[in-house]
Image (cartoon, rainbow, N blue to C red):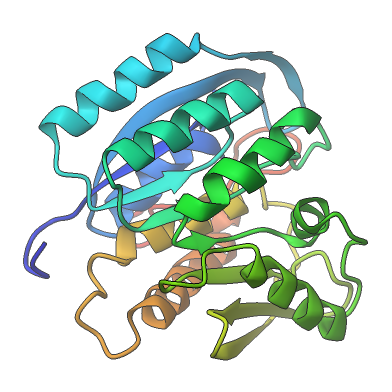
Length: 277
């Protein structure tokens, strides 16, 4: 895809009716960053800014049909993976991504909602390690998710983050470029530290923490922003670093402007279209 083209990006994830997370949030981020957004529904939730009250997953045959029908017709330049829910869904998605040799796969291993509700079955974690990690180009876990994936204690310091991200990178294929973005938002303090690592370059990204309760869907938004930007940054000297830095800047502004929205009584959403209204 040339840099002058508008990239087509698909989110394979769950639906959050409140629009703060999941596919609806991903489509907003894609659009805000100049990509054409597509969506494959891997799960339905009954959810608002305070809680997840129900979960329904489509039959895997229909999930497969969604993916196959889309990829048969539309050139897909990047894929964002979000809430996949069950081991069967994880296996189906991995199989179809392999079949279509999907590129620029950004895996956000969604396990727990901001409300504390679990969104990934325990038996799906092993399938994620086995089937999806080999397919992803960038893995974007937060600290609790990183602990689950590596079967170790959640990192509690930046030093522990360094050790954890090295373990995560060792779980990805070594024969081709693969990246891990370890998000340090769960650490205490006024400074936010993220690490980006490809097995060779370790890039530390620091920002002042924004004090707000409007953090619903921040992980979804960041990973979808990265997916939207990867095709656009392909011709840059350090394309992945450029995409991640631009995505973090976009998310930061979306959080800063979130107070202009009035959505729900719990963890509010970020303002995806802050540049327009």
